[in-house]
Image 1 (tube, rainbow, N blue to C red):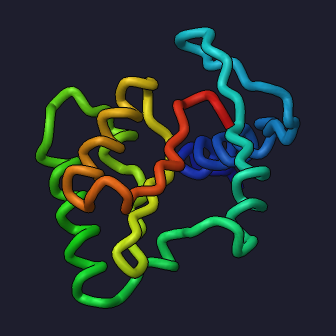
Image 2 (image 1 turned 180 degrees about the horizontal axis):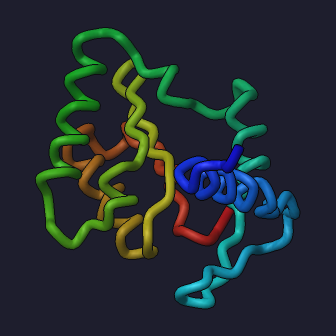
Length: 139
């Protein structure tokens, strides 16, 4: 009995797909189109730091109406503020507990770090902001 051509072609594709090798190496991978080196992000140090109670995380956000409103005002000012803020700056963590605001996360430049902290101080008051922002690339 002859094998129909209709069955042969899918079988060849399945066998060819099974022969494809996958890389499990931790070496940097080169992208084919751009020759750019892609390196896995390693946030182990930051993640370990955030597991301790030494730093605030978004889970520490105060639940009082005043704390929620203050965080909302700062977030709104960041998102609707100057168009020259980077996406990273617009996504910094704004954590308010008992009227004290903590800013955490990466920003693109030192000038952007200063601008975001200044904006938060203008909303929350001068002595109510703890600026823990990091310029991207600096751990």
